[in-house]
Every structure is written in structure tokens, then in C-alpha cells.
Image (cartoon, rainbow, N blue to C red):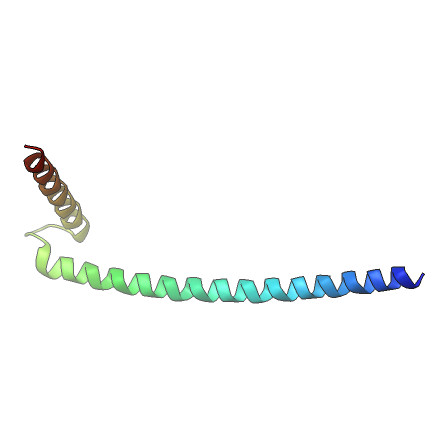
Length: 86
């Protein structure tokens, strides 16, 4: 009888410890995600402003400029690879 009371008490303690740990873990992870979202969002806003101010052509949107720049970069990399193979 005494053993079963000890086992039950240990199980209850273990459940409380695990529950407390999970609450702390969820709080830390959600806090990190909020910070990460804020940092990434801020960077993207700055990058969009830069592209809009300096890299867009007349009548071109930021998304179109990004796509054009990515295509140009890919073409430069392919040309560089081809030049390196010769």
C-alpha cells in the first residue's frame, strides 16, 4: 500500500514537471517566432524600399524588378559556368 502511494505521488510530480516544462517551452518558442517574424518583416520592408528606389525600371513593380534581377543573375551564373568549362 505504501509503495503504491509513493508511485502515485511520483507520477503526479512527474506530470506536473512535464506540464510546467511544456508551458515554458511553448512560451519560449512563441516568443522566438514573434522576434523572427519582426526581424524578417523589417528586412523585407527595407529590401523592397531599396529595390523600389534604385532597381526598378519605369512602370515596373517591385515584384517584377525582383523577378527580372533574379533572371539576370541566373543568366550571369550560367555564362560564368560555361566560360569556366572552356
